[in-house]
Image (cartoon, rainbow, N blue to C red; front, side, top):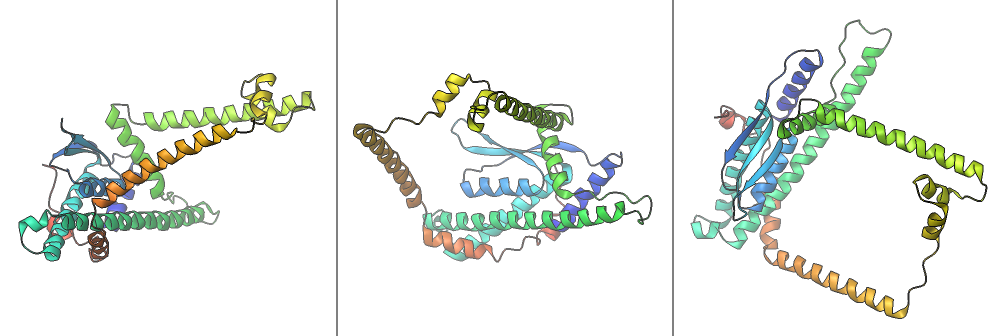
Length: 304
């Protein structure tokens, strides 16, 4: 299914690149508790690999009570169906792991098992997505190079690079999210990149002018001066710091020790919430879950 989804997106991109009307983009909301971390993290990954933006909605008690998806309609449907499929599969695996007692399904072991399954699934989804992007990008570059060859048949259209399409989808989803006209985000980024490149070129030229005007100005000093600092201030900032006193060193080390003590305590507290044996078991179990088996049962579901 993943391959067909990507082919569908490439078809949409090719139609729009030729000036046609592609699949519409929309925002869809879904209500349903996502109070567990494994569900929130899993659906974020599913949305990402299906070229959708996702925003979780929280109530006054800071509990996730639903989510909003922005993207092509078929991609939104794919996210909902796939998340439903994986969630149901994980719950079936939990039942097989801990037994049929409902109380056991709410145990620390069961929650840790779910976290482990979701953790490995996220990795597998991202790995497969990146692999497909690399494969398609390589094939598209080769096809486009062949199409540009003088001996190639005339009229051969350039092949859309899926990674470029993913960036375009991210921009257009951002436009819809904030009510911008389509293309606004991409145009703003292009302008920002052009402005940055121009500023860097001007700064490089200024550095060269400063060093040519005064041989005593070093490269490092010229960089600060080109950034707008006076020579006196730039030299002051480049001057080696005074050696640390014993009292300063002791205060710094005590401060660092307190910071790491708090960090270790937080990490320990988080670690105690997880049954690591169950987490590892969940990660192993995730290898058995097919990432393309949901087609027959869920493909008929549409946005309601």
